[in-house]
Length: 239
Ligand code: UDP
Image (cartoon, rainbow, N blue to C red; front, side):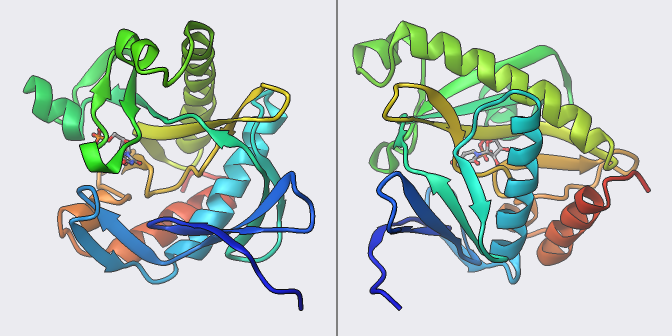
């Protein structure tokens, strides 16, 4: 087998070159981090679940008109994706108050927001990924006006589609984070992943947390929560 060229290693993934310069191979790890890398651990089976769940959702979004980087799943933990230049903004969409939003504004977790909220965070570990306004993003040259409008439009379209898909699995989509990348053509496409690492998902009946908050907040049952989300989505049905 040809030598593998590791292009990048992040907290949860490794990215390798392929024979096609326009395509890279992503390998999902079981490593988990929180609070900007301060808390570390392993969630057994997470890599395989996040990979397959992300791919299921990216295919679903593609079918509904959202462009993504997805090319082909090559194993439980590995996927080929189009090589993109990542926009250095994390795009967070919120339907219910939770996490940093609840903390920042003193609003109780679970409060339903009157409409979906889109926030941008500057992807910069050294700075702790600060929240940025549109003007910050423009003045720091993180994105153009046109990009910001497109990111907002795509994020809201993804939100509508995901709310529906998760509802069918008996899950409430509280909030989530997206990343986008630019193709050589200039087109913005959805990149990174959509998984319990990047979404807050609550059981629709019990409101039990079935996502990375179980790891962040030491709630126990972390592996089981990831498996439950994946089983429900794959089954495609409410219980
Ligand atoms: N999120 C993420 N990566 C980050 C920060 C946030 O995937 O680096 C996700 C997080 O899982 C949640 C949403 O974005 O679904 C909003 O996160 P929040 O701003 O509330 O921050 P947190 O409380 O997770 O620190």
